[in-house]
Image (cartoon, rainbow, N blue to C red; front, side, top):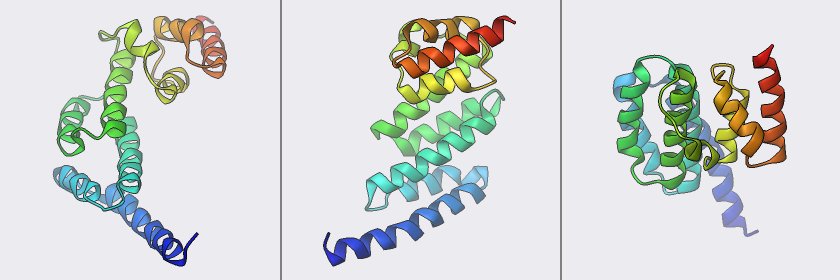
Length: 157
């Protein structure tokens, strides 16, 4: 590794931490602007990671409440076509639909990422036996299928 690359990596860590801190402190009205600013960082991977953590934290807080819909719509604008982030936001919408008993399809859940399937299996808010049963039978990995089977047993007790 070159010395300049090492210097760049050292500089990225404090910037990442500053982004995470700012995203934790941001008020709702400034959130989209701050997300857009972070995503303009020259290190797209680092920016995506910081915003991804923020999405996970906020989606978890808002998942079953009425503010989620507006928040997700607001976040979609600065995220735009960034593959990782748009997929993560789409999967949070799927998880919300499952948690609230709204419409979702088996294809959506079976085609979701490992992260989404693990989250669906391990999140207490998601207690829909149909979703857990689907993952017990068709989860992407053995780990997901086993966790779903265990969760299904808990739900059936």
